[in-house]
Amino acid sequence: MKNTGPFNAYISAVGHYFPEKVISNQFYVNYLDTTDEWIRTRTGIAERRFAEADQPTSFMAVKAAQMALENRGMTPDEIELIIVATVSPDMIYPSTACIVQDKLGAKNCWGYDILAACSGFIFALTTAVQFIQTGVHKNVMVIGADKMSMMVDMQDRNTCLLFGDAAAAVIIEATDDKNSGFLDNIMHIDGSGAKFLYQPGGGSLNPTTFETVEKRMHFVHQSGQNVFKEAVKGMADVSVEIMKRNNLSSDDIAYLVPHQANLRIIQATADRMGVSIDKVMVNIHKYGNTTSATIPSCISEYWQAGKIKKGDNLILTSFGAGYTWGSILLKWAI
Ligand code: COA
Image (cartoon, rainbow, N blue to C red; front, side, top):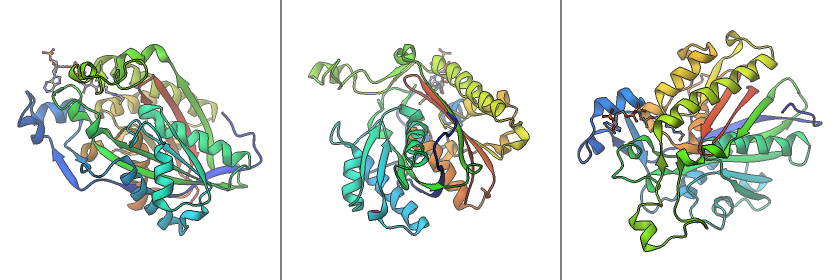
């Protein structure tokens, strides 16, 4: 979607939070039939972080939001809208956005959660941008936060070692400059992919019972190879499409910011786009797949390290359960 509104939106600040507890591959090697070598070579992950039992998703989300606010020099009561992307809300309801709003002390805003799994952050960002471009809001806080350590079956070696916990936040604000900030996006869903990545228990289809828990239906179920193939194709195709329709070659792209599910998926996506790996933001080796937090945490870490410059073209792309996928083109504006 190209911007047809009177204003444009740009990222004015970023922040992230990773829990302190480091979980190395050895943690899994100690009790599962796996090896450090398998995990590193098949996924690219060396370690990830786990939040403590008393640190739900909102805890991490608030920390990330506070860092973004501090970086912007903004107070919580200036925020007009909070959107939280998550598949691991503190509770089914109220929304995690409500809990974050209260803990932050953001007294003058409304907000809600978005569920698009690993594409949650780019879906939330695309939604937030509409409110700015149409002039409805002057600023929006967008948070990607997930406590995946609570969502995976620790006995399932196919999934448990892929994920970690994290949150990251961005503040979106309005600008008159139509050539800077968010320039374009392409978003898709295809529910025929639902059977390859899903959590069957705990919803209205299979409400929680002793039986659903016994069958471990409240955990992530994934058919890894199917998701792998579709993820590479999905992210590469939309990213190439967005480059073509904006007349950009890979030389014009400063950074590709892909969802961090597997280093081999990231590499294959970059290859198909003709983007060299040194232009790809990567933090999967340190944190694993943090679902909604992968893309904003990459941006926040690279920004903190002084690696993003004003005027840089960034392509954000993700693929996740649903299937959900998409690509965002933005020109860094700060
Ligand atoms: N340790 C050791 N061996 C393992 C293992 C583990 N933790 N997990 C699986 N294996 C084995 C399998 O049993 C299989 O053995 P076999 O050949 O004897 O049958 C072998 O390793 C290869 O399994 P396969 O599933 O083909 O591995 P893969 O290369 O596809 O890697 C994933 C598995 C899950 C890492 C990979 O498919 C993946 O990343 N998928 C996509 C994840 C994703 O993008 N999710 C998206 C959004 S969140």
